Amino acid sequence: MSARRARLYDLLALLVMVLVVGLDQWTKALVVSYLSPPDSGHVVPLLGDYLSLYYTRNSGAAFGLFANSAVLAGLIAVAVAVVITLYLRGLNSGPLSYKLVFGLIIGGAVGNLIDRVRHGGYVVDFILFRIPQIGFRFAVFNLADAAISVGVVLLLLLMLCGALPRAAEPGKPAQGRGTAPGYWKTAEREQREEHVGP
Image (cartoon, rainbow, N blue to C red; front, side, top):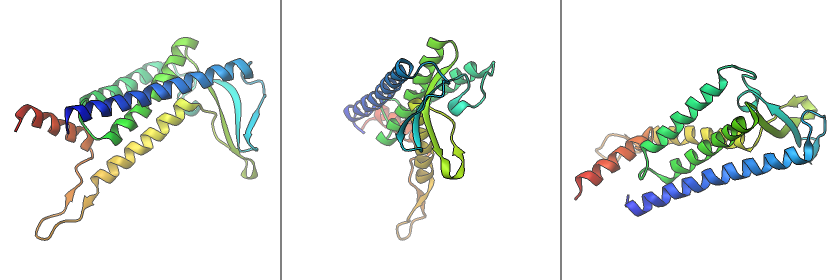
């Protein structure tokens, strides 16, 4: 991979991060402005009874998990640091798909981290999904939670697809696609090739 293309991929990942953080903070600000106070029972339907806006404060992790945990903030900080470290291992190298996925995950994590710093430990949640016919009500979440969840699912799919063996050529054994855990292996290989040169 050329250095110019690698830098372009990193810029696109950064753009995804900025967009996720920007949209997350903007939508949260709108919710706080127009749906306060939290947990007031005020529900704004978006898609019938299935998708609505409902302002609540979440002191737990994504989707309300581990609410009011004393060590939650530390665990979140460690998780964010690990994800960023993994991304930096492949800086200036690696496929675009992984870059964009990490952009979603890091952007979502940063968006919620900003909330916790600004609001003293809680995040603003406002997306309510339910299926009234069967009495199903999903935990209230926000755009940052959605970005993290989608990013993690896509990352797992990319790693799974990369680990699947490709069809072998006649006379040769089957091989993996070389992309999983391949983001880091590909990155390390490209970095070695750059050092070795032609």
